[in-house]
Each structure stands twice: as structure tokens, then as C-alpha cells.
Image (cartoon, rainbow, N blue to C red; front, side, top):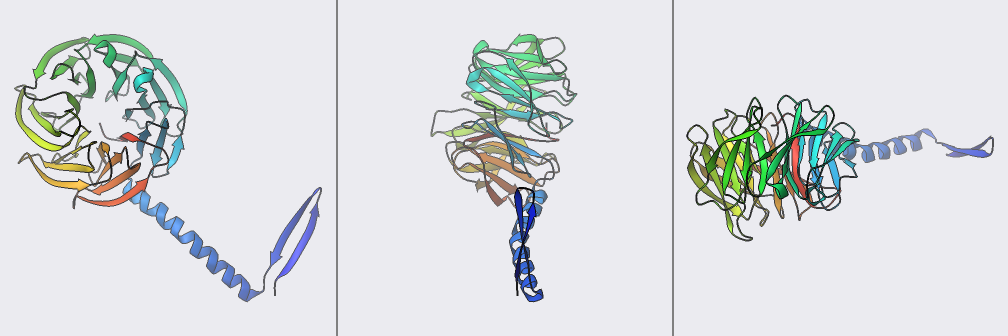
Length: 346
């Protein structure tokens, strides 16, 4: 039978129980049954996240890192987030705060806050990891930030209401979506000027964008009126022409292309789906239900998984890139999961 032992330890009392052998076996079995689901859960998440994934939650000003599911507070109005090529630095836009936050990607410690303008949208970090670029929507420009001292070094006008950007493979160029002028501005980063504009006739409000792995094709998601079908423009960068417009889900969303270049993905914040597009046929091959209001979408570096954060569902959906089925929907520990970044992905 069990015995109760009480021993004095200064002002404190230590209480312990000793159990008969058969009781100890029952206690050990119960402990194992309680622990196993937690271990299985952690192991399952680790499998689904071969690299760290960072989700910003705009309404609560938080960043949640997966697979650890740790939450870092103190990033008001966080809107877009990117992780540097070395995997150690996060760059986060503060939307209507007009600020950019830089944070340690390992522990969420804030390293710097940089004032950009009234409204800041997309951000990105160059492939060398030496330069950050922020879209100052209110000024119609992008701003270059030295990542050694977090100082703005140059302002480059690009047009009315720029929204987001991606770098070319080696970082010499940046492609900027200019929502107020229905075009893409091609910026020479070294020279600090726009080399050329790529017009997008028939597209309303070029929004988010992604570059194909071979650097030849730009995929551009638009920003139509609420509750209208969206479009994706497939742009040949050599000719500066649109190869095709593809009809996709409601309103606007994010854009990404798998590392092998075979599939592109875009979301519809006005609905509940992610569209998978075959990059050869240029057709939507699957519409995947992920939950209410998906916006951010990114794939894992190995191309095995696709992640989408939902703004109204407050979940992170994990999609199998082979079967195009949702493997898991993970509740977020915050509200309005807007954008996400994956270590190793441009």
C-alpha cells in the first residue's frame, strides 16, 4: 500500500509518496499514456516542418514559429515577414505604423526598429543577406536598408502605390508590383533606379508576386474588388510580355512557386481556398479548401509541403504538395494570420 512521507527542509515541507509495486506500475502506465500524445504531436509537427516557418498575426502583433509553436510578441500591425538567407534574421513590416522591425529568427528578440513612412507593405532580404528592402507605399518608393547598422541608405521611386517585391536570383534586380499603375517596376539595385516597366494590361492592381526557380517567369497575383474573382499574370521576363492571365479565387492573396518549378500556388482571402496551377499547362489543377480567408502561402525548401495562413480561420494549413490535400490544420496562438516566411525560400 502507499505511504505518505513528510520531511522538514527549513521553512518548507517536502511531501512525497511511496507506492507498492503494483501501484507504481499503474502510475507509470498512466504517465506514459499522458506523455505519448504530446511526443507524437511534436514528432508529427517536426516532420511537417523540415525548416522553420514563421507566421505573423496582424491583429495581435505576434510572430509564431513552427514547429516549436513559440510565440514572440511586440510587433504591432505586423503585415509582411521575410527571413534572411542565413536563417538568422527576420524582417517584418508594421503596415500602418510605417515601421520595419528586425528580429533574431532564433528567439524573436527585437534587434531594431526603422521608420519608413506612413504606410509600409512588402519587405525582402537580398540573397547575400546584406540588404533589406521595404516598400514605402505612401511615398511610391522602395527603401534600401543596410543590415549591418539598420540604416536607410537609398530611396528609389517606382510609381504610385507599390505593394511588394522579389529579388532576382543573384539580387542585382528587384521586381516591384506597382498596384496604382498596373505594372511591374524592374529596379537595378546597384544603380538605384528603375530600368524598365512591364505593363500588365487588363490586370487590376498587381499585388503579390513570385519568381520561377529559373528566374525567367514572374507570377503576379492581382488585387481586384472585394468578392470578385482574381487573376494571376504569367510574365515572360525576357520579352516583358504577359503569356497568360489565369482566373483564380476571390479577391487577392499570396503567390509562390515550388522549388522544382512544376506548380504555382495562390490564395483567395475573400474565400477559403488555395489554387494549385500547373506551370506548363498554365491551368488550375486543384482548388484546395484550407479554411476561412487564406492570404500568405509558402512552400518548404524541399518542395514537399505548402503552408497557408488563414486570416479569419486563425489556422496554419499544411498541404501535401504531391497529393494536393490538406494534411493538418494547426490553430494559431493569435489572430489574423496574414503572411509567412520559410527558411531557405526566397
